[in-house]
Length: 287
Figure 1 (cartoon, rainbow, N blue to C red):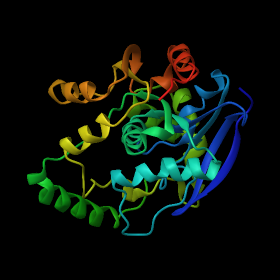
Figure 2: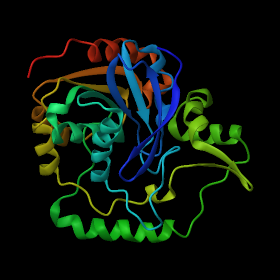
Figure 3: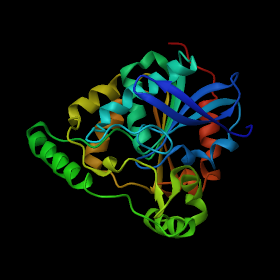
């Protein structure tokens, strides 16, 4: 691919920052990152992909995108419109999705919302959001409200240097400092009292509202695009009883297991290149 271009896209709720690889004549792909990450998460994978117009974006509250106001919520359902608002801003009627973790979970719900607009989809270690039984909704709401109040009284963690941030975050992620640098290049900034990540601290609070499992399955059943689910061997642990109905719900699903951890696309991008390239550039099927 060509060198990336940093761009800004206007959607109804504000300005979304993004990185664009390839050229407008390539296959349109929206790339969605995980929780507290940013578009830099695709910096080591995207340059290895060809024949695509790939736009990796920072979700609101992440990276260089706008933050919502103090006291605002970041419910999971709010991520779904972002895909279509961005596609509309880019002039794309149909597009493919490449998502990791939260971005993969949100992408799956987006594909179930407007199935006709999604051509193909690759999900890296994410397959729908966490859910809460309906009778636990009051407790979930209370937990989220309590955490939001606590977080609003705090400041973002400060690091003494970029190296300090890389060392700390790489330990948390279980990767090398080199592998996490694309995230820091986009999401770490220097302030008077040190270095800190740019994501909205309110994102760390538990969500006050979650989907039920039945609702998630309803979205997944409506997906009609070919979907590739990539499961790293050392990825996020999943509940076997919960994941089986989700797998059965998607009519055209391929599952590939690969070596690596949750951020395999950052730590070992060559493991994924062949899978992602082949899947996203297959000829579109008639609907």
